[in-house]
Structures are given as C-alpha cells and as structure tokens.
Length: 100
Image 1: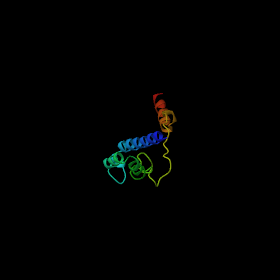
Image 2 (image 1 turned 120 degrees about the vertical axis):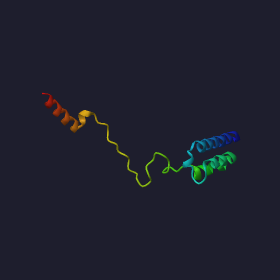
Image 3 (image 1 turned 180 degrees about the horizontal axis):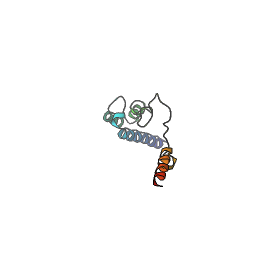
Image 4 (image 1 turned 60 degrees about the horizontal axis):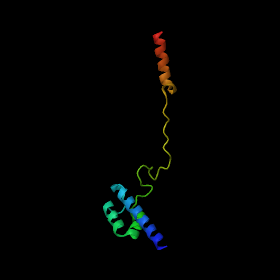
C-alpha cells in the first residue's frame, strides 16, 4: 500500500511539473513561470496543489478560447464552389453571350 501512495504522489508531481514547464510564460498566473517550476520542484505535493489552484492558466483565460463575455460559437461560412456563387454564374453567362 505505501508503494501505491508513493507512485501516486510521484505521478501527481510529474504531471504538475510537466504542466508548469510546458505552460507558456504569459499564461502562468500570480507568479512568474520559472518561480512556479521551482516551487513544484521543491515542494512536490504542496507545490503541485498550489500550481493547480493558483498558477495554472484558468479555462476562460487559456489560449484559443472565446472571451468570457462571448459564449456564442463562431460560425464560419462553408467554402463555396464557383458554381454556387450567383455573381460568378451571371458573369459566366454574360461572357458566354459575348462570345456568341
């Protein structure tokens, strides 16, 4: 049983350390990223808990997400082929008439 607890602590520590190292510098909260890495290295359990609660980027502040005040999904127009574009078809008809 102590071996399992030790392995769980090691896994938690490695996860937090890897997460702190791979987080971009500008996304770390409350302290500089280097200081977070040192805290997690020196205080395996407490440092990991502190990192997860206070240092890790918040979900709403993470890169690639919508701002907190705009939760609407971004709707992009599907790519259209030239035969789906009415203006292109009118121009094509006009050119065909001009050639005749």
